Length: 149
Length: 287
Ligand code: SF4
Ligand code: SF4
Image (cartoon, rainbow over all chains, first blue to last red; front, side, top):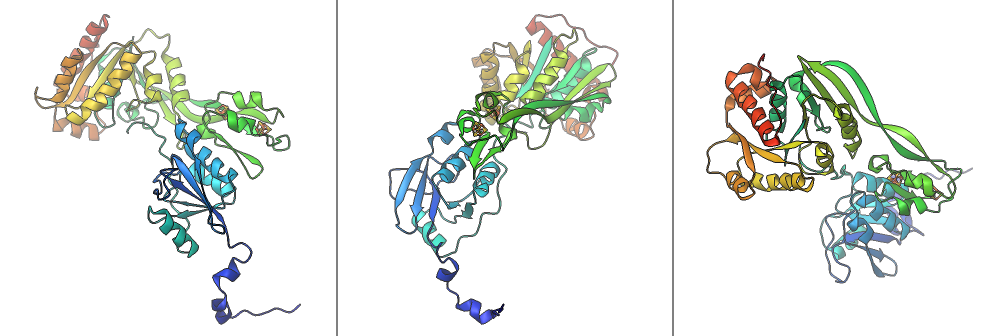
């Protein structure tokens, strides 16, 4: 069997399109504050975001889904929100932060979580498309503890 | 008689009041329900007599039986279940052990197992019984441990001092539900009035008689006095701001054992509680 050596120069020739070939387009989910305004902002919380924006990077189709069950719940909002976006077929999640339990559900579904750097939706989608967003690293343990120390 | 000591937020001196109060009462039982941060034992340093694990029931799934119908996921009010990638995920720290999911599963794929959520440590210090609840890190709810703690005190003749968790959450509710009297510990600041009003509300909801201890007291011109007057709340004690107490506390010493003045302050507080609660006092004069 022939082994084709790939040199460093060859790799630099490879375009982003080649790497993502066949899988360039994605359905992304973003937690947002409003489901009616086209220019609403990204929600600072994932689990308790009022809505999710589902954005298809191929068709550029936008769809808002209400996160009502999670926001009405006492605890475990992150889990229910995660279940929701996974069920909607999201392949990537763009969010400023994400709790431990929600992250567990999302990663179990093979969905990648990227950290947004601004609260502007359009900017974040562009940054994602340009490959500028990093995967979310610091997953917080959740804010379930009531009261103080 | 059970005296619950609570405060709207941490750092007000709730443990200080509970520990010193218990220390002036003969044969008292000190029950540390602040299961996330039980600190009372740091002062009493009790001789341990026994440790009991506290278990709760949580579901486990038999993946060969689960058909993926998701009825359990829909059912769980605490969102402890998710169905992802053709398998059921169970977040047992969110589970409230209602047992419902196992009952409704049409394929009998769920069963219940015991899971430890913490332990209860029993010990003695002089003539006191010190019972401490400790929650395992990462657990969501201290309620099962608190229930276990209260079981130990339920039919005792002794005076029980319950050191409650700080705040006004469901664990506080659980801790005071058997109490005959609630001592609300607060600082004399404006910010504290809000926290005080929350725990006062809680005590009122559960129909518990209560009174206030103002800790780190400076003078009578403080918003807490006004709040108490408006709400017809009696002030049981005013404990002055005293650096000596911080020093003693940092050393893990008990103020009433170190200082006669504080012995008097807390004996007086105990008498006041008994008077308010309409019971008879049994003061321990030996200490
Ligand atoms: S109810 Fe039973 S069969 Fe249905 S998803 Fe849950 S465990 Fe599986
Ligand atoms: S036992 Fe009750 S709380 Fe626990 S996972 Fe099942 S349905 Fe949810």
